Length: 316
Image (cartoon, rainbow, N blue to C red; front, side, top):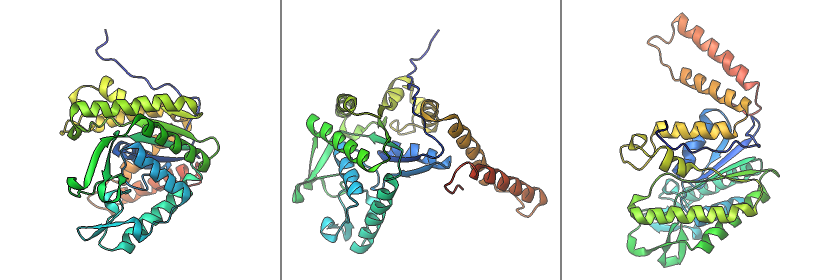
């Protein structure tokens, strides 16, 4: 007897290897997956522009990274005494233009260099809604808590969605490694502030655009993360207290599904061992000078050294 409808991620013939670099971009769920990879000591970079939810703005970010665009002061706006880029997350804001620009341009340079050696890209879209900043007639990634009267909110058209996905793919395949694999997901986080019906429409448009676009490209994959959360893990016990975001148990379940489908056996073993080492490193004894604890640290160093021998990049 079955009590749930399990959603399976097809086992991929192409596997993520120990030598691979993984670039993750998009909504906060992309950051969750990237952090798990980072904790496992894999080579990963996430969201050089900060969290981005819609395909149009994400495409602008990828284009800027591809071109290694250098932002200038005229690319910023001044609001509430802060210098702001409407293409970036609020974490880039500062009271000085040169500081905002320094953060933006450093991240673009780092992202450009990382993309050139990237083997895998994970893209997570969150919404089809976008805001237009009326004073500049500019479609934006983030409203930065600027009053609503300065924006027009609308859904991206089907053509805008498919064009954004297509341009993103073309730029990634131009800058990344020749056989780059690109994984698309739709975030399971429901944007309830848009309205329940509106959120469902928004997610549906994303899924339709992806399924209409990806068959025209090689090395692209669709991961049913949204479907796993909505169907396989439909119970509210898999959500945080806000009843919107997946909780740690749900994230771990999805992570394991993803890993089983895409990780090589060497990567699985490498990440599992590194998780154990990370947990051990976080242990704090009552007496840090006790012989037993010093012996414990020496054994940890030996384990890290053995793990380091498996990869060229620096771990821990």
